[in-house]
Length: 178
Image 1: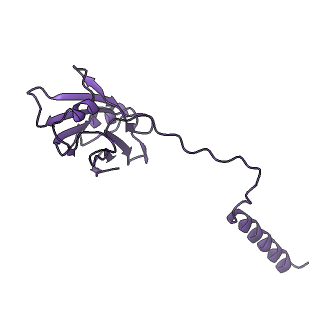
Image 2: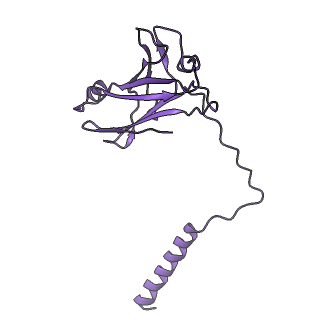
Image 3: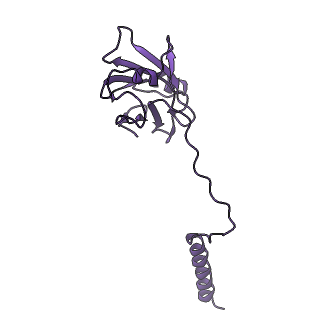
């Protein structure tokens, strides 16, 4: 065999190997059926998610505060909750500060299905970056937003409110998540 035939044989073998990887695997009739995905753990009607754009990873262990800043029934003392982002950079549940009311109970107590409440979620970015030895322009990032409804998921036109933040030491962006 000359070198051209050898090269052609290697190319043909490589192409066949790549084609095998691209073709779907045959479906076995004896393969076990896939289980339906499990439901997520119960979450509050307001959640957040933070991604560290500097590393492309979730912002784990970031202190976050959620505050009810106005409602038709708000008192002079703001209602506040705290949490720390999990390993995936998420907060699904809030711990009340100085009281026993939960986010769902506050929303469900509103007088009408179309009641509006204003909230602020504050991310303690300065100390978080400092703990990593990274200089940051933002001592904190605060996002204010309006929630419409009483928080009864699936009822009265209610929607879950999710606040994602893409966070860098020199920039951040946010949007209405789902």
